[in-house]
Length: 239
Image (cartoon, rainbow, N blue to C red):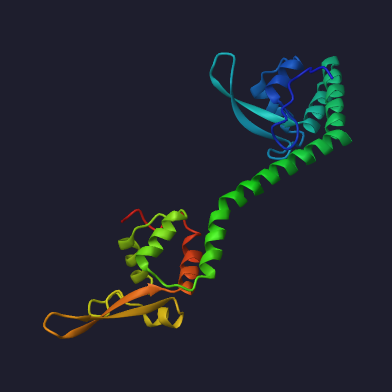
C-alpha cells in the first residue's frame, strides 16, 4: 500500500499528524483555528487524539496532534471534498491492514518477545541475590557483623561496618546506651534468635581474668537481614 501520508506506529494504535492531515486535505483555514473547530464534533483528548509539540516550517515550536485513525477518517468526511474522500479510503485500508490476522499475530509475538526479555533480564539481575539468600538460609555458622557487611556489599548493598552498627542500634537490634552492654544484642534480637554472644575468657599478666563478649549474627539472623537489605539500593555510603 502506497503511503499517502505518514502513519505513526510507535504507540499502541496507529496515529497520524493533525498538521500533516490538515495540509494534505488542502484546508484553507489555519490549523490553529481548524483543529479546535473540528474538536467541537465531540472528539476527546486522550481518547481520539493527544497533543504534542513540533517544529513549524519557520523552526519555531508549535502544537501538533496525533490523531487516531477513526478520528482522521471522520475529519476527512467532514471536509466534503475529493481529498477528504481519497484520504478516508486510505485510512480504511490502514485499519484493515492493522486488524488483519497477520498483523494481530505479529503484534502478539512482539509483545511476547518483549515480555520474555524483561523477565530474562529480571531473573539474571535477581539470580545472585536469590542464590545468596538460599545459601544463607542453610548456614549454620554465625558470623561477625563486619563479615555481614562484606557479604551485603558483595551482593549490591552499599554500606560500611560503622554505618551498619549505627543502623542496628537505631533500629533496636543492638543496645545503644553507653555501658558494658553497648553494641550487644537487645532482648528483642535475642528472642528473635538473630544474634548470639561469643564469650572469650582473657587471662591478664597479673593473673586476673576477664570475659570479652562479641555479638555474632546467626544463620537465621543472616537470612533476616538479607531479606531486609536486599530490597534497598543502599543502607549508606558511609564506612
